Amino acid sequence: MIRRMRFAAVLLLALGGWTPMQTDDTNVAAGNKAFAEKRYDDAIAAYEKAKGSGVDAGGLAYDIATAKLEKARAAKDQKGEQEALDELTQAEQTAKDPRVQANAAYNRGNAQMEDGDYEKAMDSYKAALRHDPDMEDARTNLELALRKRQKQEQQQQQQQQQGQ
View 1 (cartoon, one colour):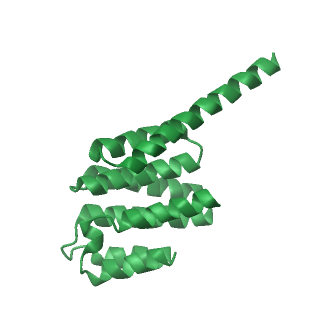
View 2 (cartoon, rainbow, N blue to C red):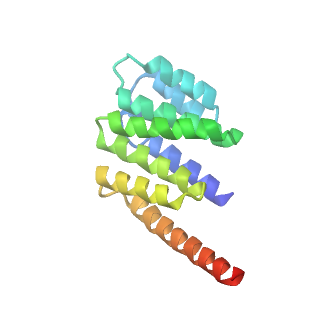
View 3 (cartoon, rainbow, N blue to C red):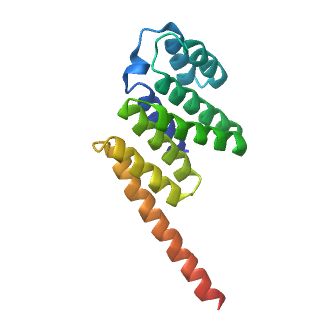
């Protein structure tokens, strides 16, 4: 529960961390408010309306993917979650702002970490650090993912030894 709350708090901080989210665009502002209130469908709709209004397309792609990810996770929709993770990857690749790229990779890593896919999470955190070498949260989570993967490997080895 605490990890989920911290994850959500990090997402909210990430949403406010760059220019696309600090724009005067009323649709983006409405999307941010809806996201903060966990009204993900409303957030997605508002972000979609902001397309073509001069707001950074990469930032909007990130916002939409992040809202879709949270919606899927809340509904325990694995297919929707995977689609949102794919969209975060796409946002990372198409965004021009390195902070958007870093946050897309970082949020993808957080979801992968929460799912116990430590290898993919480490790759995502490394990508975040390539985009923003000063992103301390990504560095911390990379180390945490490495430790969890090592612990997982140790447990598997112990189980194999006990089974022999």
